[in-house]
Image 1 (spheres, rainbow, N blue to C red):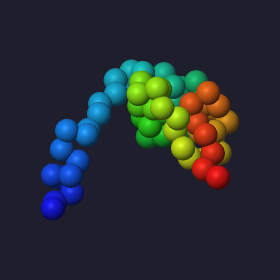
Image 2: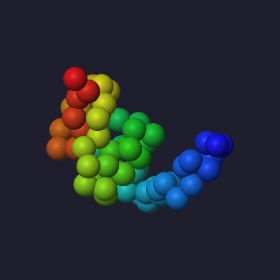
Image 3: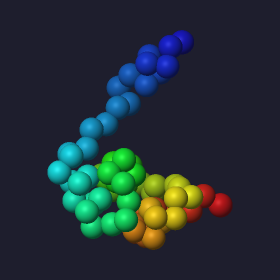
Length: 65
C-alpha cells in the first residue's frame, strides 16, 4: 500500500492567520504552531518533548514520558 493511500482522507488544514497568531505570541515556530493549533481544534493533547512547545502551550502540550 502506498503512503498516500494510507493517509487519504486524514489530512487537515489550519488557517494560516491563526497559526501566525500563535507563533507571534510564543517562542515557537509557525511549523510547531500548526501542530498546536490542530491539536486545539481536535481537542486532543499534543504529545511532544519540544520544550518551547511545552512551555508556550501548557494547556495543549503534554510531555512524552
